[in-house]
Amino acid sequence: MRYLCFSIFIICMLLGREGSGQTYTYNPTKPGCDGTWTNGLCWDKVNVAGCSLNSPSLYPPLMPSASFPNFNTYRNNCKVTVNISQSLVLNPGFDFGFYSPVYEFNIANGAFLTVDRDLHLMEQSSVTINNSNGTGDALFTVSGAIYYRKQSSFILTPYVSSETASIINPATNTYDGVLFHVHPNASLRVSHYAAFPNSNTNYFLIEGLFEANQIYLSAGNPGFQDNRLPAKNQLIVRGSSAATANICTGITVEGDAYVIVEAGATLNLPELNLAGTGLFDNYGNTSIENVNFSGSSLFRFFPGSNFEYNNFTKSGSTVLSKCGTTVASITTPVGSCTATMSRNTDPAHWESLTGDFCFRLLPIYIGEITATVKKESVEVKWETLSETGEEQYELERSLNSNLEWEVIATIPSKGLSQISQWYSYEDLGATNLSPLIYYRIHRKAEEPESSKVISVLKPADLEIEEVWLAYPNPFSKTFRLGNKNLKPMDYEKIQISLYNGSDLLGNWESSNLSELNKRLEAFSSNLKDGAYFLKLTKGNQTQVIKLVKQ
Image (cartoon, rainbow, N blue to C red; front, side):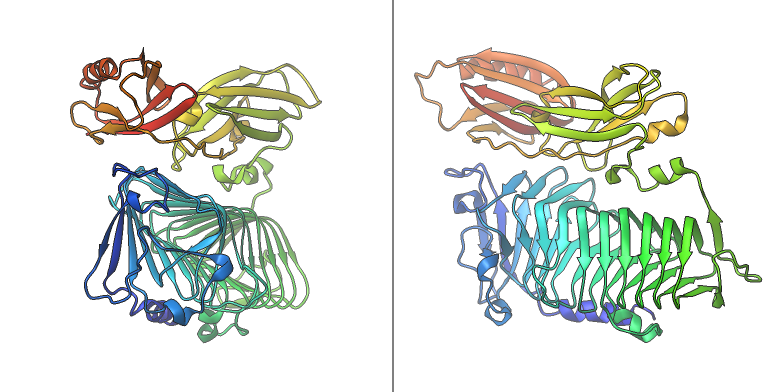
């Protein structure tokens, strides 16, 4: 019954918005399409009968954040559905919101939509991201921050990954009823911080994977009674789907905010600051290296829960409860209570606890690590602060958000040292393989815990003029190339490279497109089913096309 009020609130907030609306399907092969969101020639638009307020826009409608209208202006606008099967970057030149009370994306497996601005969620509006294939991984990336407003919601359904810099309030206004919902098999990653600093009934509801650098929760509804809990600002890590939350720096819970880790769920973080009248309920598996427990806050451990810590500091009029019994200390035993507490003082354990996304570097060995994007490569540099001379450093790369690593280089140590040493490696051709690339440094040595040194880096996308077309795509046997700007008497050489992941499969060069197509047809007929990247260079223009054989 604890979340009955919560469920009713969310359902009521969204009821009445799911009626018929209009559909936009991204079609970059249409004549006149330049691959941009705001070009109506790139979209197939269908106004669905039954809705009188379909948007007149030829592309999925946007609204500049600087001129958001009152909710009553757009509350009856039709639902907007956007279908994307090929990757797209959205940058209209201003920060914006998706202009509809119900906005739904269907992104194909392996495709991405990158919002290269700040994204503002409009008042009482929902943005839902679906994987149209229902499996694999569809990616929705916001390079800036996601700003929320009153009763706005951001929903990731299964097999969707989303990344953003921050999730924050756009001003000092008090907004309530905000929902960020991560469904099972979905993931949300926040590289800076996520915060609900005021008001109440704002939720991070995690049923999949949530990874963030820092979380701040405050305000909410006072009182620790069960009927007060749904009104608090809160982080819910759901147990029915075995959800996991990894927080890189820590969580601050104050005011009357609330964190609950349900039975079967997992929360990992290096530091918890529980203050004011904040509340933390642990039914599941929680690991916190350092706990600062102060004010009039309440920390409750329920039967069957597991709690791991290193340091636990308690002060003020705090209340610590085990299986319903108030105790003076985390180490105080309580009869037959099945809530387990264990202290772990091993630094290596805590340094690797929160996973790859959290840049959990062992500071005694690794200092700074950077990645710089060049035209067709990424230069990765890292600093070591201490070396025995026996180390080797493996540079690993992942081309997807599932973090499936491959070793692309092995670099020996420069020798015994107690001073700063710098290493670098240029990953040639990396920017042609994927728009979003992850790297980490893996330190190999005799001690097994040292291999926990990891990092994740995101390079910026490269802007290219898309004038080449591969058809059909996907293809079953062979494909051909076309170029809408190619003139009959144009004899400038065309260079083509075909990649499978990081492996170069072939290079071709000719000033005759027909000749190149014959070579590609012969070569592609022998390819196995899967995804490939085709790099085309003509003069000073370069384009990369993702191909799928099926």
